[in-house]
Length: 288
Image 1: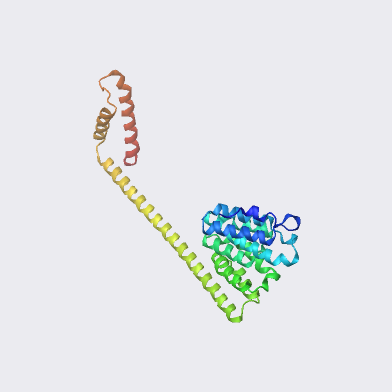
Image 2 (image 1 turned 90 degrees about the vertical axis):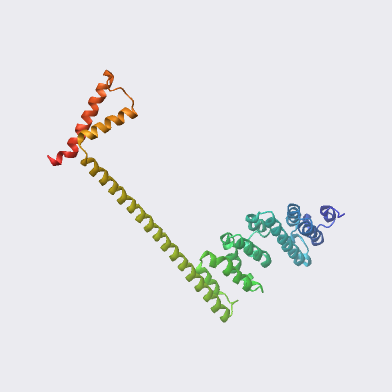
């Protein structure tokens, strides 16, 4: 049975209460074990946070600073994996920045994981600013991982977002690319731009066709209604007025079910007769 990492780390603290690299490494091992073996992602994240909040290379001796940075980077890698497993990937970037404060101080491996994660989740815009700031920092441009991260940023962030000018500026203005690599990258940017423009043009054409189809259907329906109306009016005009009046009276008898012999029905019949006289005059006024 493993001992409690916090107990084991207690005597191994540096100046100012910060964890010594050995104690932080013990917590890192515990977090990795919880993540990979026990699949306890919440506990693994908690172990990473305990070590990360206490680990301060500023408070350690100069000889331990390098080890402290490596441990902190590894803790962030484990923490990123734990957050992703818990479907809390949206918190990853803000979570790692609480230990590095600014994006340009992120280790290359941590930034790479962030770009890959947000790209996989179809949210490359969330890491656009952080990656751009990191790549523009002069201290990072001399790192051996710089070109690989620039290409990753280009393929996974800038091109999917359609940031053509930023992509061209990155490729042309970076000394990390050779001439052949620069030409290849510019060709990839041009191809991606053409594909997106073609896709946009196709979508606009499909929308216009659907609109034209809808308009054609509406016009066809309107013409059909007009024909039906003309047919009904022509049929109505061809019938004798007395037959129309008789049909309306029978319809009233069936629907309203009133007694025409009743004195109370006389006003209704008078109004109905007046109505039909008005209709007759309106329909046949042009014939007289």
